Image 1: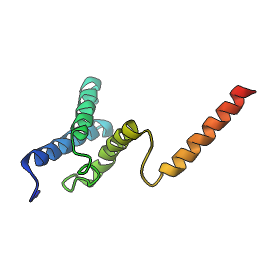
Image 2: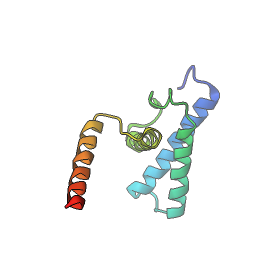
Image 3: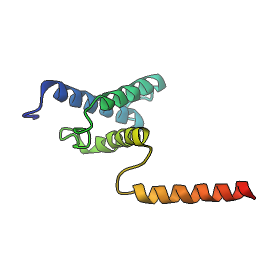
Image 4: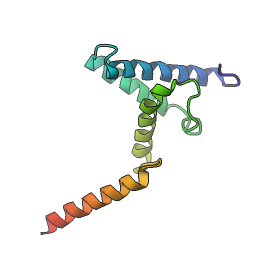
Amino acid sequence: MLHGMSHPLESRRLYVTDLARRLLEMESGQLAMQPLAYRVLSKRLREALAGLPKSSAPAGFPELPPHLLPLVAEVLETRHFDDYGCLFGVCAARCRDQAESLFGRVRRVQAS
């Protein structure tokens, strides 16, 4: 399944997969939402991804089922924003333009 990967990295990726699966089950209603458990799982997922080397994080997770990719991608995007103060991805430029437009309108209202 994960040939050529070091054991610690393989374990971490399987851990990330399990956390993402459990969070998605709560979000989709397959499992009863338990706020405390959800917060703990969410924090653990952020921490597990934060400890993942930056070079391997963008490479993706070949063992991650496709329905879990958006959840993990959201955590990685948040991590990137927290680290660099900017978005990345196909919508980043459009989002930046919209934010600048919004801030421009707020500044004009405040100035008047």
